[in-house]
Length: 434
Image 1: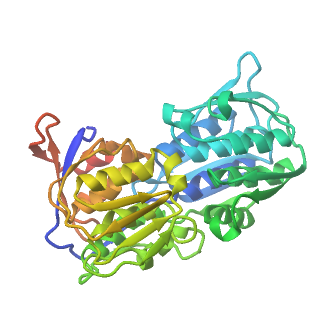
Image 2: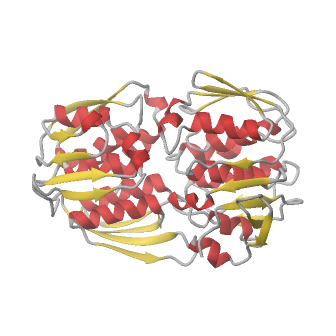
Image 3: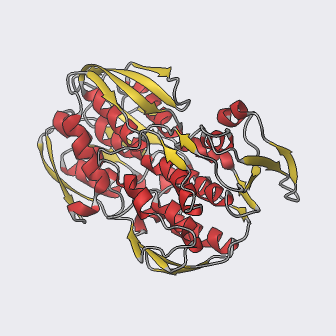
């Protein structure tokens, strides 16, 4: 049974002690899938995320001709063990100019960017498409870099849909701009060893590119001749559960199991940087140097702090699953928050919040951020909660499961006509299957 169109999160009186398991990192999973496909021999990925974004990547790799086996893992329902049979850099299948091989990436920016570079190594023709929002998201800097290497890519407006004419290995230096997305550089770095590319990055300092650094470190550590590789839990997804401690700072009742300590994920610093209810907040938090996607979690709970907070360098959020800067501002206003938008900065003042019907914009992180806030603020109702399938399919199951494996929250279906509660959602398997 799918999740209803409109749900209400009932606030917790106080969180019980809990230790939450979260799914594997989406960013690491999709990078590891590309590296495994380009490696020599079989690679086994443990703790890999199984969500809309990673399913899109696996489906595309299979269409290209790679063998990928996917087996559920017992500890975390959203994780899988994946076995990929690499072919030493060979791309096994491609289409023709008259009939390109179709690759549908959904709204997965990682799949769209990483596969565009990867299929350049083939000798066929490939057509990459996605959902309408993916066709609006930027690709130009990546396409320009690949064209400088000698590859032909046909793309109106330099966005998807794009037709890539594979050219095989074409060694040489190439620079790519990352002002719009650091994924452009990651896409080139993942395929660089096979393509013979020497990748330079323009438009930002190295300390502003944590996701590019993740890619570099992953490439260096990955077993290129096959073997086993462990995917660590997703720090961005963990931010919603650490935020419970920020909402009840006197209790600090919630922990996240196996919290990543590798330094690969910038959002692993969220427990240190998150604003706390009833306490002063950090004056400034940057999307470039402090937090990645978890900055959205910090923004949503920031009105409960006792001092103003500025969240800076948010430009990249405007070009993701939705225009996230505008979406955060608008939905926080609905809840009574005082928010000022100044360029790519949101300034948030201490506010008395109330519940509201929240538009999630079919954005998984908007849904999870405001669901987290709803554990503290009464009357929080969310449209389209199923959008969490993009990166965290069992998110609402974690909220509803009893402690210590979940938070024990009540979740109700609401009527889309008058907003009244219809029924309490109690079947956890139904929630996970949504």
